[in-house]
Image 1 (spheres, helix red, strand yellow):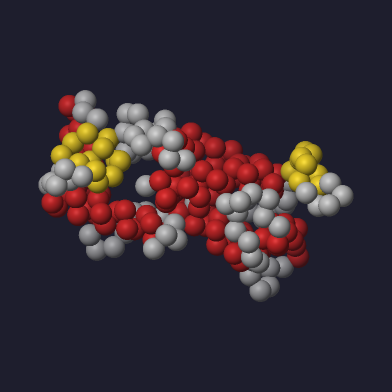
Image 2 (cartoon, one colour):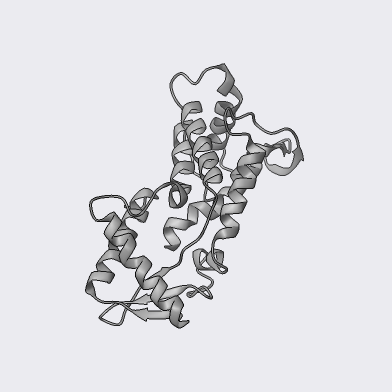
Amino acid sequence: MPDALAGLCELDWLLLRLRMDMVLDHEGALIGFRHSEGVPIPGAPIEDVSEAYWRVRDALPEGTKELVDRTEEYPPNVLLLVGPDGGNVVHLTAIEVAESDLRLLAAFADALDRAAGPRPGPEFEALTEALGELGRVPYYPWMPEGDEATVARWVRQALSPVLHSPFEGPRGADDHETLSGVLRYAEGLGWDSVDVNQDEEEAADRVIVSMMRAAGWT
């Protein structure tokens, strides 16, 4: 879902900010970056987090960024589900990412939550300061304006498509099997779109709602 993936595709600049020192002009405007060791993040070194993030981004299908940016309506080589009424339901794909990368991204989100908490501890001091600066003076229009907790919450929501399973809940396992079956069927025939029945459409709808809720859109 483009809206659920938007934050994930926008995290690269925040990670760059945490990896480098900003260079500001005399009025406080951003004019560039200089390399540094980055903001220390306990349990989630920023260089390792950045590499994990890009491995996950690279695992997404070709055309995902264009879909999110609304410059393309249909990403290539991604299955399109068509509902019983003829309307498009959702694009469906399966990607493979390393569990170690997911654990690292989860540790990163946890560290930001800790830094934004009431008693972060001295080891989180630099990270707390960086989050506060980002929230006070957003350097990009899509970044949230607010306190440290606002920025940390936005990061967790941005990571939600990879940290949150859309197949949770009492019907999650059945929905996963249903949509996996649709994907296997279409891939076996080499189709780029497939008509789904009402049960399959409802399974896709539940997944959409789950993704959107995790990303903070509902």
